[in-house]
Length: 264
Image (cartoon, rainbow, N blue to C red; front, side, top):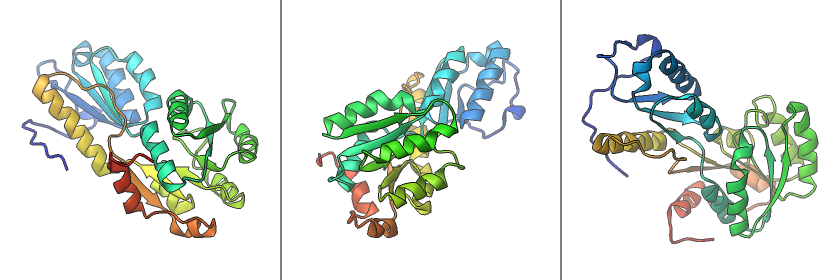
């Protein structure tokens, strides 16, 4: 595990507590979540002095960043909660090596990752079976039914239109009834009935944020925006048994993902 000794004065606060006096502004701002980042951009637009303060946006999905970055006036970077496509596909090969046809419902948020995911799947000999939903939640279930006709598993990607809290229970139930394993990005989905998840644990995110700050302290240069550099695995063993699947344990899968010598 990486260890960092950060020599700096830091404070956790809300934007309402920030003193906008140019002589009292922080040297670096780290935001937590989409809303905090959006507020940072809005404040920077209103206060030119704050716009000159470097910003690291964290705990936000990659899909939300381009819009925020386009509005920002100064230097910025990001630590995303998204797992990189290569790591997701590697987990599929480790956990479900017999499932070759990977179904994905793309929505407005997740469509941006399609090229990287398609390349990663093709590189591992897997086929992308896809449906795109851009016209509201009413299109989710027809697209899901079409997907189930060809796909051998359903890969859920972060997308607030497709996998909203309202939709998720019905999607889980539909996949289970069709005996289609659902692989998600959320441990909560596994507890609710998904087979498997590759998710970003808070402790891993904290270490990555610390690493980005450490790099800035050493060089006064922000690292480039980056996806999660570590992933945690969750497995629903009861669902696996119900689907007649024999999966390695979550610990075994997580260790295999970390081992660069394994190339399934």
